[in-house]
Image (cartoon, rainbow, N blue to C red; front, side, top):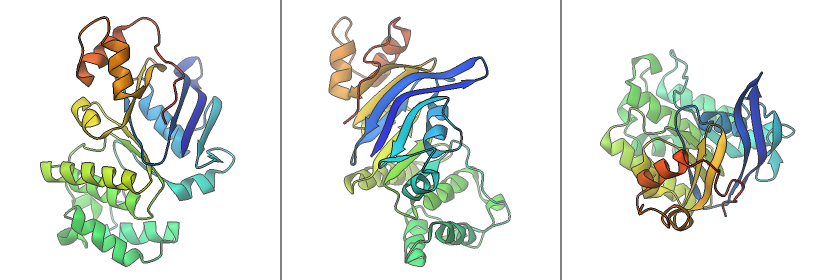
Length: 251
């Protein structure tokens, strides 16, 4: 569903990502983790078509993110870490605009279901500028889910959410995966990644340190030192000198 092969991204002489490869199949949730500046957001922005790769091939459901940009965007949703909404548009207007852009059938029904799920029903006529940070995050998530994308990209999706919103989003991510979507979640909240993700990709300084299932992760890093949690393994992986399983595939 999502395929990244030998992805490189450089900004002038600064290398942001160097040689990342992975696949995410339908029904899988990949946790993308790494220190600040590791290349996580760059990877998600490139997959979504916001920026172009320096080298490599990235596809969604077989469509190339550069050559088939429109087809990729039809199938994909990207929620950045700081979603930029239209300050003067209300919740309903954001959803209507999204529905028109994606030509969503039955948009009113879907929009109603989403705003009720994420507790925005009482704010449907409220402009984005008057929403709290958490409500703006919920609105961005609702817009992303409206057209039922087959590939979902989340960059720090829990920012600003209250406990109920966190639970709703985690459940919705799992439900979408069960229905056949391929999902990537980038987060520093390792407990959340361990809780909902089926696979994990650890990157550091733009290079892959590990890619695979949690069982494979524990087998790789738990043999020399006792490490059972993702947090413990994360530090082992990012402090190790060689990249481990650098081009392993998910799925």
